[in-house]
Length: 580
Image (cartoon, rainbow, N blue to C red):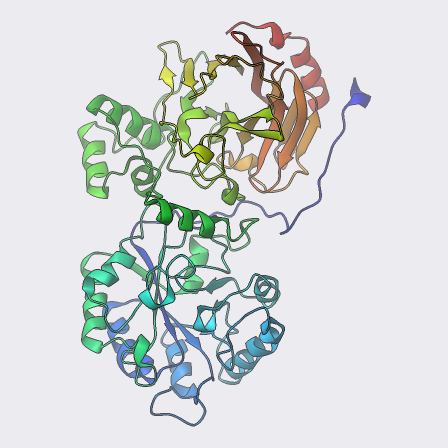
């Protein structure tokens, strides 16, 4: 059997693989302040106000307009240098305030270098943050910015909102490309405090509000002017409401700039679609009762070690409500210390609120928790993997195939194309630790899963019942095991994975611990290096009207180096014949 196993390595498709970075959790009320165009009032008005409140900020410098000759409206380089000495970040806004389009992008490298040279001359570090002049962007700029050492780049609120409104969305790390960070608000003269608050209040549920200003006042560009008294009111609001206010470079404390979506415009299109449909993009589920609140808080806080912002993202509760409930149920001091079962692996419904992927989140913008379970490793402090059963079910149609079901909400399925929203479901939690779920689709096709934790493995049963009058064919299934929350296995890339149908296995860096999954009728074992995750995707047999078809799956952990021997041992257990 040894010769039958192969180590399959897939080359990277876009960005190089990177290990999971130890980052601080993104708190609620995290704001980035940015100021464009080298305006004189940045030094004379903005600087003392920011220093008064102890706020960080990034000043994006350009020598465009009539910067070189007009020192009434624009700063001197000595003043810019002083901003750096004061602890503020100096960012790059191109030498000539050049709008970056498909026609001008070839000039970007030279434009960046022009500001870099001036920074070097004035003992300012080479900028690592960039703002697109005029908020004009092109995907061709991303590679140039990356090669130039730019880590974070801010655009405006368009195309989601019209430029003239100054509205925008908060930055969603993992979904927004770090070189296409949106402005949650771009201040306008007509803004009142409520307009500013609308942008700042988006800083919740793992989102960061990046706020954009020009002059305070802006004596050269009236259409982006902010009166001083209004600006002071905005800053006072942030201070009085306990916002954390940072420069753009400081995002690196919370965000790995090496992790980027494969499609940087997927989230933009999703926002446009939800705006057009009048739908919310929030993905939380409020607990339905006191009993459910206690259960989910114990799961999130006690087992999954969620932060309060993550609990908020999962439940929609305020920080005060979360803190009060933790105290009410006696859970405040029990984070990560709840006892685990002695006779079986700990398997719990995944709470949501914490995205189960490191990268490629644009492939799962709003993951639904109803098909996901957290399977905790047997190793102390080893975290957990998230098994999505099923992530997707495909069915053949007259033109090829289409999605019968998908556990995300932004990719078109046969139901979303018809304007049909599937109601959210929850796992049934049985007293013996097993979990079950069943969904009946609008066409009377039903499917479900049962998860059975055992002492050293997890048995999975997936079934599908055909309530239509036609035979269902091409019933391909994606069952995903996501590794982000098991730190030893969370390295992006597939070099640590072994695939041999029906098995997929991932090892830690030392090669002495493994996560293993398998499904009968496996048609494709594989891994997504960006997530990272592994699959042993099966296919249901053709299902005639009235019939039910089943697939059985396996998940286990192994400590040792001889993975081939372990897979051979599992194969002898005849797990495909097990009953749920």
